[in-house]
Image 1: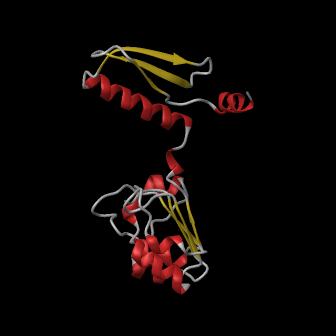
Image 2 (image 1 turned 90 degrees about the vertical axis):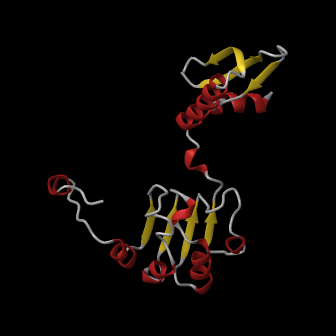
Length: 178
């Protein structure tokens, strides 16, 4: 999507077509949502546009890249390498990627921030409450505001169910040392 002229000028930005980005960039880093418009945005034709020393990084959504075309491009040396944090059929990784030496594969770590993990835990909690699966809840929080633990009692049998949402790094290190 093109920025209004005033905003583009303030950022010293220039709108270019997607194909030009692939043809002129040493590194293409993808940051787009998954949609019909972005599905296989990176395909065999666009990979062929990249320079042979080009690197593709995808931390957005797996279906943005045609993984079969990427495997072929990497195997033939069309581009130098790729770094992937997301996959088309997560958690399954395209088998052709596994044996390649010019690709770095990460297990979807893009969401591994304190804030996002707390938000994910709270969303799970809110869903459980919304479904009325839980009647009693105790939320423990540390002094720095990081969610530590949610303790629930199921209404049906009153057995405690623990959901550890997040423990900060310091606490994990302390536990390892004990």
